[in-house]
Image 1 (cartoon, rainbow, N blue to C red):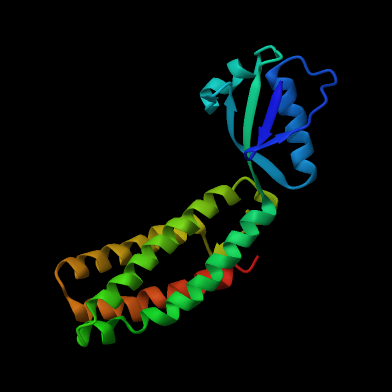
Image 2 (cartoon, rainbow, N blue to C red):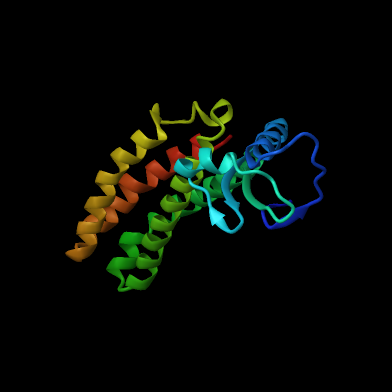
Amino acid sequence: MELFVNGSKLDVQLEDEKTVGDVLKAFEEECQKINTTTVAIQINGKNISADLFEEAAKEELKDDTIIELKTISQAAIEASFEEERKFCLKLADELKSVSIYLQSGKDNEANKLITSLADLIDNICHTASLSALFPDKFGNLLIDGKTLPDFFLDFSGILSELEKALETKDSVLTGDLAEYEISPRLEMLAKSLEV
């Protein structure tokens, strides 16, 4: 059997493990000791989704069995949140200039900021979904008294308004939303990401 974790081959000595499930269980026990968890499993080149896991776990280990795992650590999530927190603060400040950019014909600069906002939100949502794997550390993450999903549910209404303002080329509303609605929310979000 060969075991790869995040693309690197591990030198593994089997003890009493007879099935793929035995290996996965032993691996997960070791991961828990270092605040890491498995996020993807591939066995002999086949992705194992949650609905296939039980059957795959019963597979007998053979010399040619290849198990590939992807893991994520609590520390990696903390590092991602920290990067996103810093970018939130930077972008919150820059968004205050959107109305000036739009009024002075610098639409490209304004559009770059809006694209950065979309990318940031996508990244934070991805990190937040992974953070749910570590509820002891991230389970109480609140933004202005709201859970992350509730915060983004409220935020999505403002983002929809922004999208409509961009479509109708309403530069005043776009600038106002960026400066008075989105920027303060990014600052609140940044404050909550101090983990």
